Image 1 (spheres, helix red, strand yellow):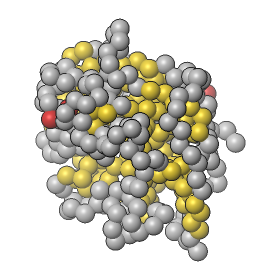
Image 2 (spheres, one colour):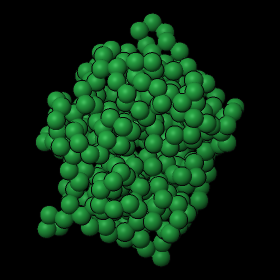
Image 3 (spheres, helix red, strand yellow):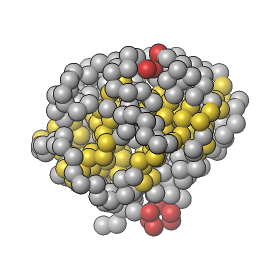
Image 4 (cartoon, helix red, strand yellow):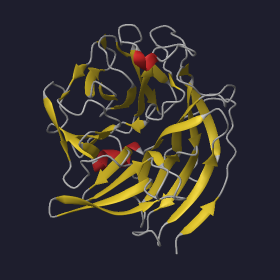
Length: 360
């Protein structure tokens, strides 16, 4: 039968002396410092590092005001589709996107990038934060995720401008590479040299490809992967694809539909096999996966503000779901990733962030 194990680890909101990130550990983006309720205003963002079993290691604060060439990087406190976190394919950096807005700025997603720049963070494995890259023109809307090969350029997903590309260190308008529908996109990743994105808009209810390869020019077509739904219902957020297997975080909280969906590709069509969740009322948003062992180990941020560790045994009854971290009031976990071992990742050569193999 399905084993549900509930473990807790206290979340510390105090700051540690900054240390290098440890390969194999989990890093999660957390919005809010616990002092005030979360709303649609710009809110401070933090990166919390934990061991794979949920032991707190340290916190890295993203800047809340411009300093030197660095910009502020905040996200909206109540925006569930912002703050997604990834690791670059070369295993050297973490990436995310937000707003060059001081805490308390009202609804930055509703302001143009001319008025509120969209800032991109590049964080090295020593915890040094660079937020010098800015999108400073265009409508853009909510800014959700940023992904990169090696930190020299970023693909950024948004609520009303699709997926855009901007080089590192630029302060300019981004190039909108996706054309047509949908324009409302969530998390973008490059895997195996192909750019993918999730959406829950119109006829795009799952994972889609954008153009061919890792394009940086406009006019790219978005194509839903065959087998994913074309009608409303699913609510896909983060995801990962490995060969003929895919895992998709779905944040629905009713009917037992939400959680981590496992899909398989056969005969050119993707088919949903099963969904893993702690309960029928808990959905998932951020997702990171470790494929180094006999069974995939998945880390997810949940709709009830926890970090769950899922061992995917190949079916619901053979899998385990363990809560390793409980969030605290007036904060929310958003994106999640696993700190890679650069040497191993370079051998894998996947193209972009998503699969982090760590030595046993």
